[in-house]
Image 1 (cartoon, rainbow, N blue to C red):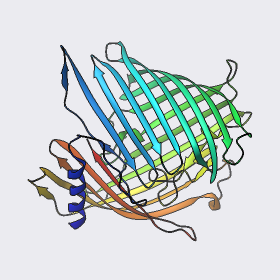
Image 2 (cartoon, one colour):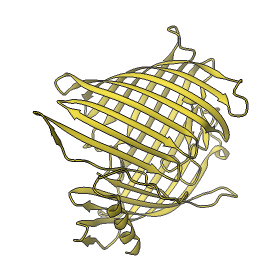
Image 3 (spheres, rainbow, N blue to C red):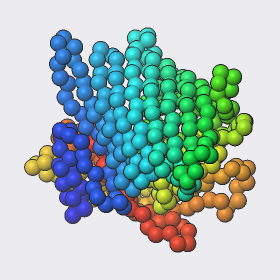
Image 4 (cartoon, rainbow, N blue to C red):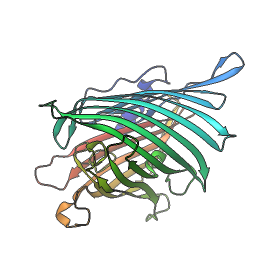
Length: 369
């Protein structure tokens, strides 16, 4: 009860989307996602919907701010992302427009990544990447399908010796499928952007330096629980790079570790040409609800969580020896409800890596949308 009251107080302090949230000073807890919607404002005879999105993740260091304008079925997004732990900042802009009614649309994205002390596999690098991406989106079989063409100008050098530079163009085509929010593949307690299947092919011949094939999937399912009021979510993430020439650029390797990929380990602590992750989270429904008329908020679906995760990222993908796998277990609380007419979602985790010398890590996430 006391924890739930603290969480509601945090929601009230965030304010109804009047400004950007300020991260807490703690380095062991954080807010993973805060989504705020501003009302529509009139611009002549056209209504413009302004939608800022803020993502704060203090344990893993990622902080995002996205502002989106929608005008007559066209959208413009401006965003920035800053990772204070790994010294990385990113800017991007995207523009989307319909091609055929609302069934097919075209998106253009430009991004700029600057890493001044970016950490890969416990070593610091200086990194710069400029990407141009064109995507066509259409809907098929209950999923959004994206066809993409991209070019990235990539530079990477060790922090201690900037003269040892690896650089070149990364040209790639991609196809991505994301189930719709009403799909059975997306449980109530799982964020829709965590469920996707992606294939990318890097190619040479037009200036690109690398050739590779990458396939990855990140999927969650609801599975039967002991009680109908409980939740049981199975999460699996797999990825593999193949047909690599001459070698896979570090930017394209898979990462493991952090709040969304093996809790209990550091953010992107491990990298490799393949990744495998499996997790099970059981939510035991708690027999109470919390309502407050002062904040017009309520927590009506509350669960005690138990979870376990196992994962690996290795270059020798075919070698499935047990010693390569990393494991973690933990517990937490999930609170779901509303704040005014918005959905309110809190999670608090404590995770322990099953490895000698590891200390527990704590996470907190909030979602308001």
